[in-house]
Image (tube, rainbow, N blue to C red; front, top):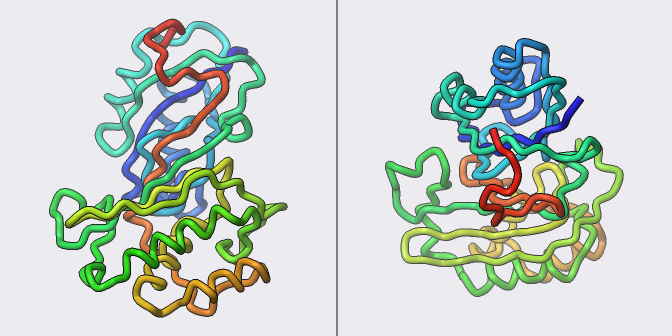
Amino acid sequence: MARYFLEFAYNGTRFHGYQIQPNGLSIQETIQKALSVLLKTETEITGCGRTDSGVHALQYYAHFDFEGALPSNLIYSLNGILKKDIVFYNCIPVHDTAHARFDASSRSYVYHIDLRPNPFRQETSYYCPFASDMDMGLMQEAATLLLNYKEFDTFCLTDNDAKTKICRLTKSEWIFNQWQWEFHIKSDRFLRGMIRLIVGMCLNVGKGKVSLEEVRQALDQKTALKQAWSAPASGLLLTDIIYPYIDRNDSGNKKRY
């Protein structure tokens, strides 16, 4: 058996998240069916992480094992089957123990907010008509505050089964433009629902509904915010996953399919 990494992107609007669900179509199920048809054998994939229903990925990796020679036109064929919501870029040979989830050294997300309706971003952004009334300085302070902490019980869904709430953040910042805002965050790992809760917190701070002191107290005491709010899924995109053995600037030294 040889192991391969698939690199792809997806619009999650019409899917019930990445992971296979008993009562809804998922990214994982859709790809496995297409891959199994092309490889003529039941093929399972392991993703780099779970994204919730409606969340998108500009970059995503999943690994699979296969014995024999891959079709030379695998990427072209996958794109032909799955059309527009899932788009494949590369299939990269990796070492036998490479793991799409556990080997990632960092992950980055961006959250999009539009201050006026945009017909081209309705599925990939959150339209917030009252954003212009918010205190952007306080929102930036709230984002920066997170870099002082490693344990994030405050921004973890109650049904989360994670064994540890430790996440090592290296970026947490807002970029404010006239009609579009972006929240950028980078860490070695994230908890389920964490980023949408953080974005909701920052927006509530900007509105004056939550104070910075309340955020500090919640983080220090590892408790949830009384005014906790999870921002809509539509604005969240997974943007960048880093592996120590995949060179993002690789011009083709490794064989790709």
